[in-house]
Image (cartoon, rainbow, N blue to C red):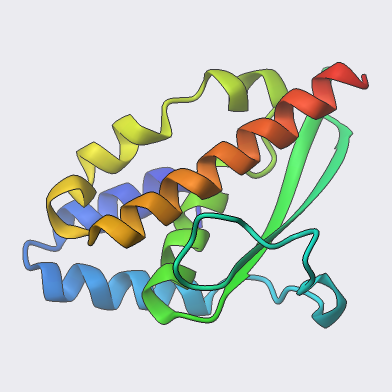
Length: 141
């Protein structure tokens, strides 16, 4: 599912209970993270729940490095937030990831008012980690 489809579906849901259910459903659509990828290297620091992100770098269509991400969490709603974050970032060129404003997306979706501070911090930690991976990919390209 594309990030535009997710945003459109989110806007269709008025009630936050429905939006939370939708996030849980999104989490169920994640490509499985291999068991060996549930390790300390892939663990995202700063999340109250356990979150793992596996990043691979490959040349994008223009030859510049692009990031391809897999992720998982042990919490249902957080797993949905992982799915949303991966839909926003995965497959994009590293330079676009660094420039992307994920916080604007999260504000548009209403997360500032409806996520607990712990989940908001975890979401920020995921974004920071992905941007660090993108910067590393550019530095080694």
